[in-house]
Image 1 (cartoon, rainbow, N blue to C red):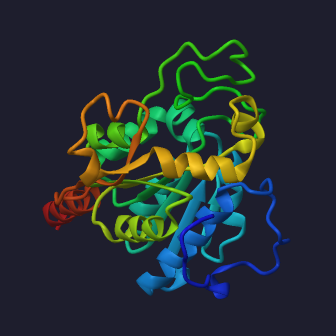
Image 2 (image 1 turned 120 degrees about the vertical axis):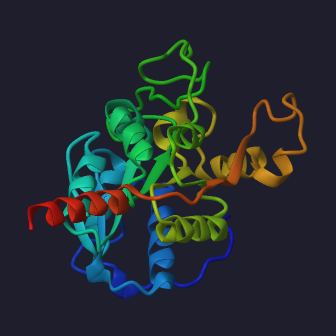
Length: 278
């Protein structure tokens, strides 16, 4: 069903946690967890030097399974906690995992301004197009016309694109992958972590138990095939017309820009202030 991926590093998992995980059978979050562990393991960063923060929602459970420094925060505020950690301990590798509602609804302003500041943080946003944990209400990424528990007759709002929003807001690195294209997802997460500045990895995932059930995608395998059929590489998309891309989404690297990070500029101010006071 998914592309081949290497074996997961067991020492990056907390073995005192109950397995199998708490997510619904077939949920893409288990695949995201595997990609995160493989990507971080390849970087050879000591796990005590890594931080994973989360907000509220299905993705909020992920820090409980990884043996890093972890933080489970309030709804929409994961990036604010990560900002504080990075400013206090800039030597740490800070990652933030959020859902589409958590990151771009209640957390929308935090997300935009974290990208604008170019903080040296990696934001991993799992987009399943719904509020999965709380019952399938529509989110900022729920497609127009689709059904939700709060849009029984069809959603009348238009979704916005997380990855394109991140590019516009000023993130240094922006990538989009899916839980079907696992090898690519491992690579995107690794590149995002290595990148200096604010990185955003949007992951198209499935909530077949809520969104899928109401939109003819209740089978997780069928949902996986939907991702395969609708995902188009950035390179291929550049040669396609607007009409050809109408019901598709791009995957790959959407932005990769070199510019000073907020932490670097902040340190310059600290050095100047220290020199002025001596």
